[in-house]
Length: 445
Image (tube, rainbow, N blue to C red; front, side):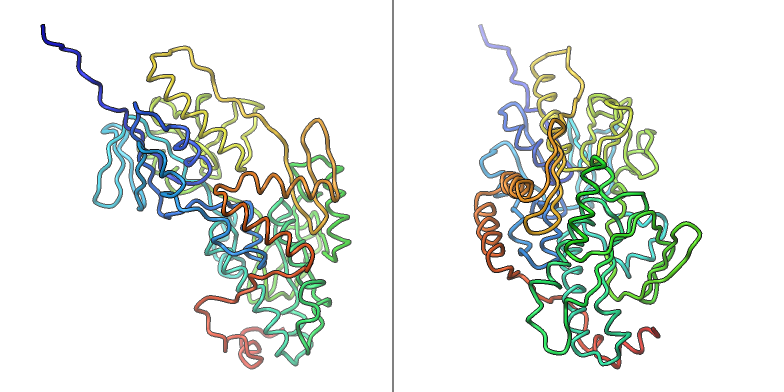
């Protein structure tokens, strides 16, 4: 008698986005019963928590980037496609990448977020954010070119403006940027110039709330501010930015309005979800929050579509503590692994499936060499031990071994020499823009 049993075709999972959420989902779906297609417009995974170190010349972009094909080369059921998804057809169960159509049985959307200027998108040209390699290189260009322009400037007011660095946003990124720029000015480069004294630079950190590092415990915020002040950073809380234009930052503190003349303004204040969230909303009728994040169900699926999952910074998950989970790497990692596990359980016929639960293992931020703040929930600590802990955690979560080794060696060298070997000024901006004559044309200080 002939065997009439038909082999079921592999379950087709499409993952959009190769960040922490998408990559951890793909790695966890290394299963013979599943075919995975990972789509990203970049061919690499970027370790975003260390982007600020690229922006301040401590490490190179390649040190925190890993080719997606290399990371997933042992997952034989996974293929990587370079491209950008511009539409989703939930009824037809397919995604559109240009003229190409890719079918799916399960879809995971993990396209992350970008910086938000709270409706003032025109500020972006004056104050770049920090979400991509290009953002970090642009910041690096502006930071180091500011010192070069100040070296050539003879007008004291213009020179002061070149040596003034304003960071908008007192979260972890803003704190880490401010501390790194202060170390550059007051330690790393203080012997490098002849016409300027880099220790006269002003590094100003602006925060709208009453303390920096709002997600941390209040006592850690106080410690972080104290550490920044010791580095030479001016911290201004309860300060709102009302305009950024023509090398001036207009701020409001209570009823008092004032201006800061600064040639270098860096944005670390807010984020908004990727546009694919709005595409999903239009195609499925689901809701998004004010930041454009997709409101998801307890299992990270979207309402009415149990085979579409949204994870990472694009997801608004408020089923745990009645407030959305933060847009940090550990959340995305855990969500990616959870959805992968959920898919495998469903394929095995399991019907009683647990909802997603985020295990918060703590928060940490580095302030400068030998200084950091760590909140593990059951214990909080600061200073040198916290700094060592921060180093170990970031080395551990870097994706590839060679990245771990290179970054560890560079950090060790930087620790003993205070040198930052990636202080490269790159970009297409003409150097003559920064001559004294040109800068006087650019702004009337």
